Image 1 (cartoon, one colour):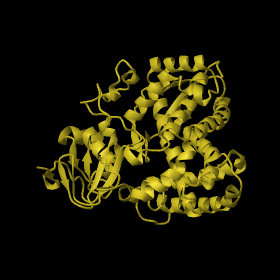
Image 2 (image 1 turned 30 degrees about the vertical axis):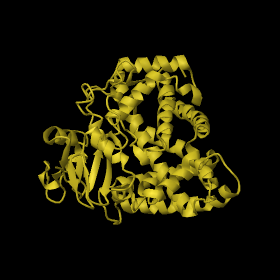
Image 3 (image 1 turned 90 degrees about the vertical axis):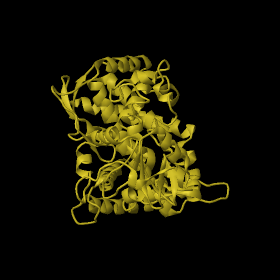
Image 4 (image 1 turned 60 degrees about the vertical axis):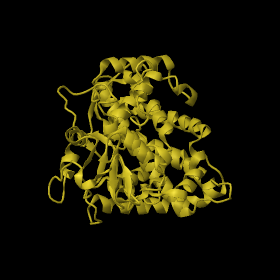
Length: 444
């Protein structure tokens, strides 16, 4: 007999705010404590909602297997993205989602990824060279703004075209405001709020993209925006202008924010683990600079580190859904319109499937140990089912393409006595932007 929601353990937290302030202060520690105290299914109060949280991979598999029959992805994500970034794939369900996703497939084909890596290599090396301009001695660089500028530049070139050149700084600045609007805690469009600034920045980006559409429709270009302008399905259908704009803005957000957070957390873990830093540096020096798409797969130890960072700090810690109708999930009866969360963070740190789950240990992804194969849904950093992130391969390639040349150029260290404090914005990253000590090396 399924349990009722009223019988589930959990905590209400503070009046009105619930656990919001505690989560903002410790977005990993709070859910970890709640799972340890209340088990794999619990209720809590966060960001003005009271969802049911599922932490066991079995339940997460059930959630990802539902393609819209009982659970709505769009309703789950709408409170987060609906105002600033409407119309993305996460805000679509059922046949509507399948139609839009099908038109987008070609933009993430093997041929497209091969071309994307070439564009990235051409821009990553000069960017890292600029990081060396402080001299030959150790220098402190804030990791978050440094990686953010790099990923914004890469995303702008890949999505809109490298030829935009002089426009990219202005566009990326506007997009930073959009990202801040998505992450803003205050949900009202009041002057001076992050949401207000984000909506104004979005309007300027919409105007810019709308002016590009006629030329992109008239002649193919290799950038993602150009590919989407040309995309057509078997029935001859294309994206409307509004749909094009919405998809590009949404993907730009996903590509830049999540990859920035992952690169920063990878730099943090390598800076405090000299052995793994040297292992990756040796791999980078063996493989050499400007690796093409085909050779990035040879960086196997780098892939283990990428996966371990994605396990500890998933791009999206909790995946929201809302029930369309009464359904049972994880042994709980859920009435219609119930908000739920599939906690990827907790599944990927679940002590039943991961040894010493809070420890940075990339060897857990080696063939000898293969902890990620203990349960098919215990490692899902890019979600699962019909809404699996289309850019998952692109994201891991970009992380490799950046970290390998970085380690060939610099030794990474943390300031003495450094203590990490995490904030969600919306992906996990250091609250102080991570002051990273970079020591230039001879390799370039």
